[in-house]
Image (cartoon, rainbow, N blue to C red; front, side):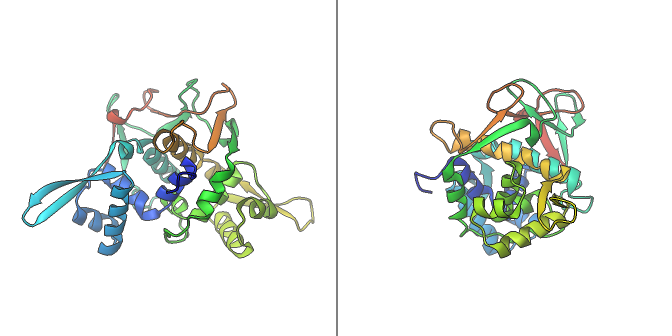
Length: 297
């Protein structure tokens, strides 16, 4: 990464890979050894080796020897990796609501040990305690470097987003992440997306069609009988905001010297920079990393 890269741009490049997201999530569920990760994710040895090596180089994972002859290592989360727990919750929560019963992690449950209950976490603002926040409750402003970082760093490719869709599939397709983020920031028309993202018409058409087909955007005529159309976020698309917000917060903490990520998200009601927080829907307590665990993987 160059020194001029914005922190959120770096985070989206780092996490904008389907296999990376699924690997980190698997390690959160205590799958730490190469063969366990390979078997649970149905991933090839070369791809798994590259992703694990990249995550170690990026400071998300570290290795620990568990056998000397022949040498064998397991993969553990670093402090920066552990602090991705809110991102993992946001991805899991979106999948629980929108990915359907046949999703690979549909049986995964999140337990809040403080109250002992399985929880469906509610997204909110840690500054003022408000819960049930969406993109409509936040005002955003973007650093000009952010788009340049993400658009110019597409070499680490993942499979393109496809249907049926899950959260890691959206996040792992760089263009889809940027189109959805631009929609969350207020863009609605084809020309607005193209101008903001400097994306080819063919690529933009394909991604917008996929978003409409998967129910994350709706397509509506601007006027009765008119040919001009707008793309509006559906509840399914709006709900992805918690993923964006938690990644943004993580980037400001771990990839920035001054705490600024490149994307400012201000909670309109309290006027403070959004501090993502999840609340247990069973006991209304704020979730903390050491008080939760994924079960049933």
